[in-house]
Image (cartoon, rainbow, N blue to C red; front, side):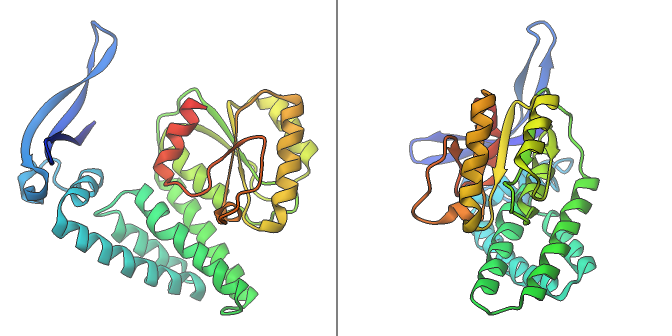
Length: 280
């Protein structure tokens, strides 16, 4: 694996292209410097060796440190969000796939979920709630988004590690796009993910936990009306199992976060979730 590493000296960041190599004697991985690139704000794409120049992850990190690239990144993200909103509400899955394909030529899949798909779906939900779009249009957009996530899931693979993650929603919650996004992203990161998707009885979730013994449970709640059901679900799980529970979703975006006997992850980037899972 090759990636960019930043080292701060005084007030400036300096970039190194490094790779992970396996040390068989110490039975661990170590970093080796491939190339010192220089002051982060002055590094451009052509400074990166040609073998790694088009790696989306490397380009994504480079954009974060280069002012010119940051401006281009923000403009690209803005245009992609506007275009995806239109294609989702039009029910156009083929164009939605093309938007994803073009975006990950520069950025990562995590950036697409975090910076494009998630805010677009939040806007669609808000526009429906404020009568700017019809319920039919909202359903069409959600269905196309779910199809898009499944297609992305089929394209990406990851090495499965030992941690098993259950992703579910409380009874009454019919929105499961958040679960699909989590399943795709965490699978990319190598977790074994059980996605129970749309609403099902609490007893069925408890039975699944008993049979499959997940290491961490993620509960996604989209509508605020389903928060009480989410609280009851968490309480039932806690009564029977000592398993870490994480709660997230659009319903938890409000300033006043309801109380849960669990860890609430209300507004964090997707790439932070694996770190939280590993320390749960």
